[in-house]
Amino acid sequence: MWNQFPSSNDMSPSSAHFTEVGTGSIDWPHILAVARKLRVEHCFVERGRIDGPPIDSIRASYTYLRKIFPA
Image 1 (cartoon, rainbow, N blue to C red):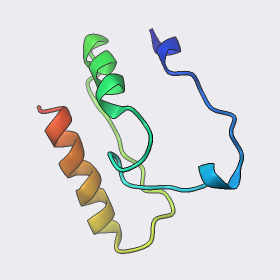
Image 2 (cartoon, helix red, strand yellow):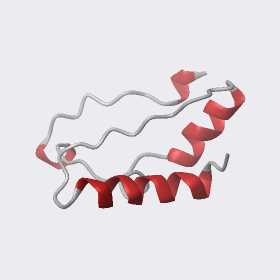
Image 3 (tube, rainbow, N blue to C red):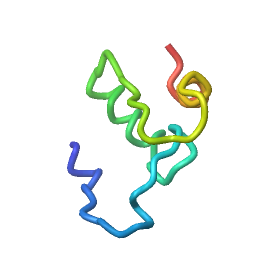
Image 4 (tube, helix red, strand yellow):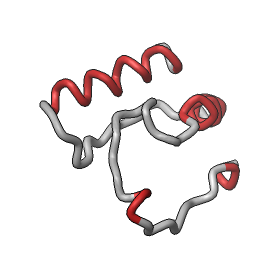
C-alpha cells in the first residue's frame, strides 16, 4: 500500500527546504488516511532546519495534524 507514495530523488535547491507539517507539498491527509487503515498507532514529527523558535514550529505542525487526524 505504501507504493502509493513514491519517493523523490529530487536534489535540486528547491527541494532542500524544511517547513512545518501542513505548509509544504506533502499530501498529509492521504498519507494519514492510509496510516489509519493500516492501524498505525503513533506518528512522530521531526523538526528540521526551520527558522524561529522550535516550540512555535512543533506547535504549528501539531495543530495541523490534530485537524486532519483527530485522536
